[in-house]
Length: 104
Image 1: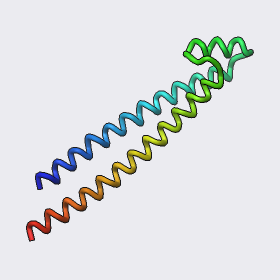
Image 2 (image 1 turned 120 degrees about the horizontal axis):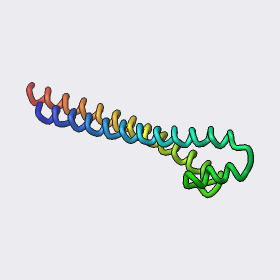
Image 3 (image 1 turned 60 degrees about the vertical axis):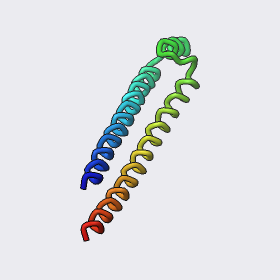
């Protein structure tokens, strides 16, 4: 019973951590998308380069690489979160089963 409660608490803590990481990555991606929209409004290459440089990017390739990396990071975090949730469900079922077997 005590071990079951401890497992559930650990699941909640780790799930919350994953949610915070995903939220932060999505917020960063949203910033990049806003910058992408601003880049669309630039009239020429000089404006584009100035805007990119203002946000710490050397050129449009480094910006595009950052966008792709952030999307991949979000996808990876989401996959890790799903794996974590599934493994915790399995652990919960195993703990529940062993608890009932001990009582029987």
